[in-house]
Image 1 (cartoon, rainbow, N blue to C red):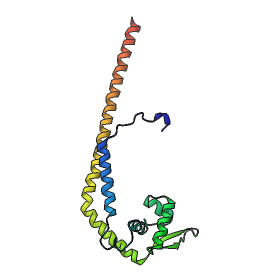
Image 2 (cartoon, helix red, strand yellow; image 1 turned 90 degrees about the horizontal axis):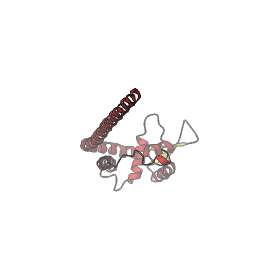
Image 3 (cartoon, rainbow, N blue to C red; image 1 turned 90 degrees about the vertical axis):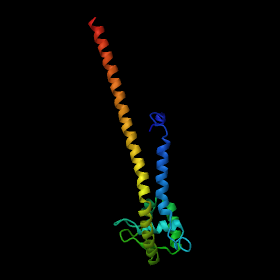
Image 4 (tube, rainbow, N blue to C red; image 1 turned 120 degrees about the vertical axis):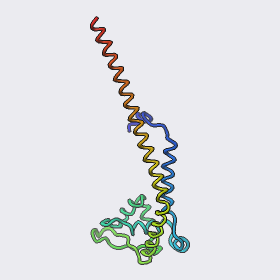
Length: 181
């Protein structure tokens, strides 16, 4: 967007859409912020649990390097380095050499953390079964509103195009009459 284009064609703030998006964001974030009993009190803090869950849930074929963990956690590289260092200091992860590239290291789970992740996966699956319909409703509301807005915009564009076409046709008729005289 060019500097002089700011504000041109910008839509008005749709408060209802903003509220729907905020509700979905809250519902989905709250789902994974909850912890089963026994993990939070005497176990690792939430950022460490997220870090461990990210390493344990890395997609097949993706090495749990700092760069990949940062990408998956939506964090900056330096923030991820600090988080991984703290998690390693807590004994939740360990560093292992990357077999594909000896210049970097990967994060690996310890046996205790595999048990924690199994407990988390079971807990979050039950939570998702309970809150899933709410998340689906929130997402469906966003999608329906977006489709509705797109249909309205298309109708308005068509109406304006028809008006422009009618106005252009009238001018053409007037010019023809003027030339014929």
